[in-house]
Length: 427
Image (cartoon, rainbow, N blue to C red; front, side, top):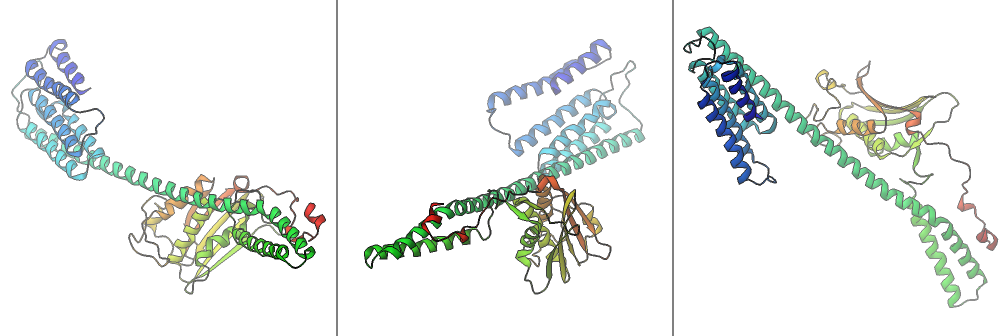
């Protein structure tokens, strides 16, 4: 594109506008760029990416080639001298800081050189290159500031994009891990749920065999069956004590369970008191919500952050009304500082980078970003603020239909109430 654009410009100025232009020299410099394209295409496989040094060398060639064209056509006073900013911006967006600084310095040196000496600008009354000193200084400053600011902005934007991509990858990794753990819990709970009925039948039949068999090997086998069935029952009971299942019973949880699970890792800390509360309209039963790994992980992360900064107390409150469900994490610490509060929820925002916190995790500034990202994927709106009496307040709010689990039909029976009789086993 540069070769085509430069060729059209030179031809248009020389043959359409009929201005005095060193056409042969300009086309020779343009041809040099064209031949470089050809040589690189033939010498390098298209499947191989350029190394950082190779890319820097190509961009340096672009700066020098454009500078040569500008030298032949008016130097720094040529309006197209602004194009010297382009290669440095490209470098800043794609290369490390060392190469960016080197290329920016090369472009600045080219600007200074073109301000000192150049051939006349193509014009009807072409005069020797001798612009006023003030114009030269102004042109140099304009180009230098343009190169510095645009390159710095492009480099900063590229670094932020890379950091954001890394943070998003981290969030996806955390979510995938939580989902794998949830799937394992679902498998265990589903197995326990399905095995409960046949195991109860085996236990009843074994007891009948033991009662009706005379002393001997058959009675001993029946007693062994009873013992092993009880052992299986104990194992299934342990599996279902904290289910994370995908069936209609275990994939839901009450609001009290939500807040209790979020504070569980820190519930018995000696230095900070952590409490969980559920509140709502008087006389109304709190709704059940779907068990979502994203919600549990995010709320646990908020509580962990509160533990790091609280003085003595943390309160996790789940509130509900006819339209919304909200969970609030409040502590009595110093609250968010103004510079952190304005950027909270973005990756790598922390007041204690790299420091090991009270809760044991290392402050990297990713916890809030990951938690906020996970909650927003469930339809929540997340708010960070400081309380009126001090302390940090974090609130996650959902519409009820977004996470509320519908009421279960009353068709489930308790297997523990089965009668130890052949009729019950048959039923």
